Image (tube, rainbow, N blue to C red; front, side):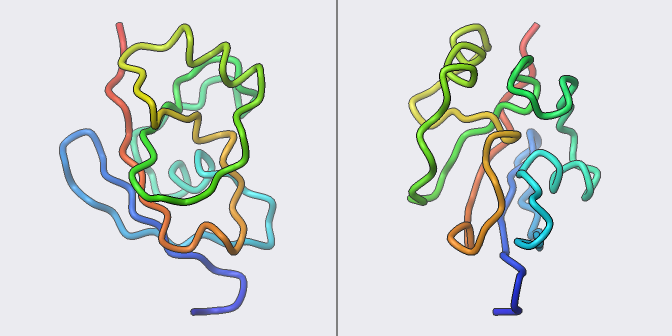
Length: 109
């Protein structure tokens, strides 16, 4: 593994899997990484856990930080929420994220 790089799998809404590389030394979150690869994730609030437009399903068994109250409140208002739902803007990139696998949640109306 390259130093300061983790490898991620992101399944888009059409079922295509994208292999991404993310730096761990730039304080990026998953939403920012997806946007950098031009995946269809909005993040309209800019990563402040205020909109749920970066809703994803975590498919791998990574131990993530507990969701904040703000994140839980947004997920309570989101469409298509599951037990493995998270906001991508709240998932920070660090070395423990190697192999993280997520799926973009459907866009709610």
